[in-house]
Image (cartoon, rainbow, N blue to C red; front, side, top):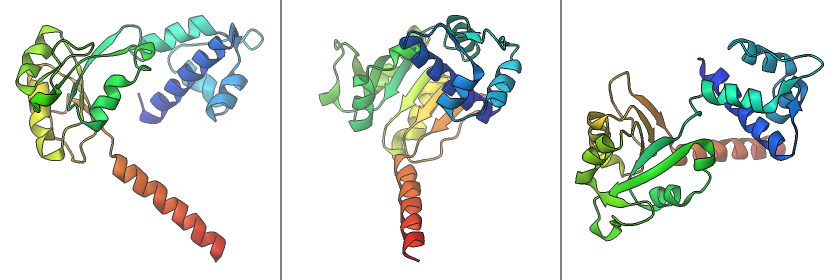
Length: 208
């Protein structure tokens, strides 16, 4: 699936969830297009790629469409996740309560700092050397890395050797792994630099 198509499908799903909360039972491609910044024809095209069809008069049944999209996106079951690094970003992720409604459950974190270890916490924080066995025991396939860049590759290697197949990386470094491993990097500083550049560029345009 192309990245742009995947992004649109996720936006469609999120919009459908909002419509459902508002009490809607069905929705039309026009509604989804307005909610996601797309076009009705693009919405229909995205769905038709996966054999999802609606009715011009009746639209799409929201519950049925959500079920199909969740299955397509792998969101029809709970995905257990482990976080490496219990610093500022890692701790914020552990406290975030919005993951579970999306089928994501952080079940543990690991850290090298003994002061951060909480083996009996609601979400346990364990020593790094316990990570490999924990991943294997709980058959975890998704990991999040929030450790300093100097340690990120080592943590990735341990995760992969334990069975992790997908990584969300917050460390400001390019990680290397087998091509079968899915790695998505989020560089917060880089994203802010991009925003700063465009804000500055617009200010210069106004002054010129």
